[in-house]
Amino acid sequence: MPEVVVHAKAVEKKYRDVAAVRGVDLEVFRGEFLTLLGPSGCGKTTLLRMIVGFEQPTTGRIVIDGRDVTEVPTYRRPIGMVLQNLALFPHMNVQENITFGLLTRGERKSAALQKATQMLSLVGLAGFGHRLIHELSGGQKQRVALARSIVLEPSVLLLDEPLGALDLKLRQQMQGELKRIQRQVGITFIFVTHDQEEALTMSDRIVVMNAGRIEQIGAPQEIYDHPETMFVASFVGDTNVFAGRAIATAGARVSVELPALGQTVEVQGRGITPGMAVNVMIRPEFVALDDQPGAPCSGQVTDRTFVGADIRYSVTVGNQNLEARRPHRPEDRMLAPSATSGVTIDWANGIAFPSAA
Amino acid sequence: MRTRSLVLSLFGYAALVFILAPIVIVVIASFSPARYMEFPPPSLSLRWYREVLGSSDWLGAFGSSIVLAFCVATATTAACFLAALVTTRRRFVGKSLLEMLVQAPLLLPNAALAMALLALLVQIKGRGTLGGLWIAHCILVMPFVYRPLVNGLRQFDLGLEEAAMTLGSPPLRTFRLITLPAIKPSLITAFAFSFIISFDEVTASVFLVGVNYTTLPVKILSDIQSDATPAIAAVSTLLMLLTMTFVTIVSRMVGIGRVIGSRSGH
Ligand SMILES: Nc1ncnc2c1ncn2[C@@H]1O[C@H](COP(=O)(O)OP(=O)(O)OP(=O)(O)O)[C@@H](O)[C@H]1O
Ligand SMILES: [Mg+2]
Image (cartoon, rainbow over all chains, first blue to last red; front, side, top):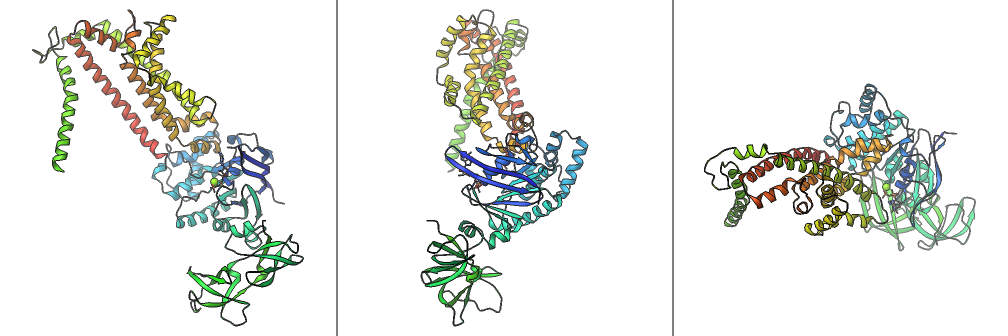
């Protein structure tokens, strides 16, 4: 059983009549890279701010390293945070920013300087100690903010969308850097993003949040392959959704009638009873377009997007719009928009959810 | 286009001459050896400078004004800073009332305010004392100090304080090492502003000075009314010199501070 570093117990936060976080229970394990993923306004920042101590939970407790810190002020919590706008101290140079926490803690200046130098080379900024903050690029500022917190060796480091302001290229580079640094120092990271791709590539575990609640916690692959709610299914990765009605259930399998296709298909599904209205989701990669006869239905290609490794098609089947994706190979013939094609769907990978009615 | 810019610049120069000419005349007149102010002076001498700098009356009034301005600037800057800190960071009942009270003196004519203050100071036997003028000036100066401080604090990124807290810094240390350096320009500006306003104040002060206690602007006023010697021109010249030095020093300090302040935006 891995050791729990941060434990949020039944945490709720109300701002007057707005419930920003509702009943969140979360255990964060030592050394892991945990990501809070969710749409804007779902309460990610609010949850982080309660863990770090900027906000008091309306109800619930925050436990760090086995100690209840709900009433403990931020500066006495064993915690670091990289804020969304980084908040580097503008009147100090890089080195002074990094030694600030060490000196606050009462460490000797010489020891602090030595640690700062080590940190700078860890984050790839050796020799930048005397630069002023405004003399740094966006990516370099990120690294300084990171170094400033990591040098204090906190039990857990919180990062609130630290890469949000960077352009795509730099963002991807920093994602790799962040992962490398996290592995190297072994500090627990709680990382916030609303970018599902970023969450999938970086995390050991992902916490998907929606409207102040946790929808699902799991490894990236688990979240992608086995979403537990319709929200998770549609927020993480692309999906096609069909409305239908459950006809029969057998263990974790459900037979669903899909009026849009005029078919009855067997998909995965839990907690569904016959007769229930359901939504069936299927990822674009399980929708195959081919001309072979015998395809269960046919559709018309309405759009085609070439994205290098993949080709994405939009297809209309009956009156339902479908996304299909297939890996691109140079020898393949591409389907032209408005072409008619057979459509084969691998329903075994479809998942049915009770439709929210 | 060309004629327009020509007319404009001519107008500009005319305005400049219009503003500067009296000042130049005062400066030149101050070097007159004559008993009465005349322009141009018959010859040049430092007689009135010797007179002024050797007079305990003038030096006393000058000293009073400096001490008064310093006390007023210190008190208003401190009080308004605390008020601005509270109003920019907290919500509380009566906040807008407090803001209105601080800024109310702007709405009243100084003379009316002075009458009210006179009544008050007579009551508390504060007329013609440093304490009395201090109270009066503080009230008059407050609105001019409060605004720049509020603006300075609004521009300050509270995220910097939060970041310092996550680095283990308790509130007082955070205030001293993070907040204060960032808002120092606003504080210096506020202090300089209130110092100059108090030092220059004459409308209300005229009502409130006494036989044994007067300020420099009030003494200049009353001397002009009694006998207009070139001593007044000499005092004015000295004051201009002093003010210019003061403003230069302050703008240097704030100028450097501004550079630092503007960086916090990134
Ligand atoms: N200080 C506050 N006062 C009132 N409501 C607030 C406050 N802070 C946050 N909220 C509300 O709480 C909800 C959650 O906000 P939060 O900032 O946690 O979202 P988020 O998930 O971080 O979003 P984003 O991805 O946009 O940063 C939002 O509806 C927001 O409007
Ligand atoms: Mg946020």
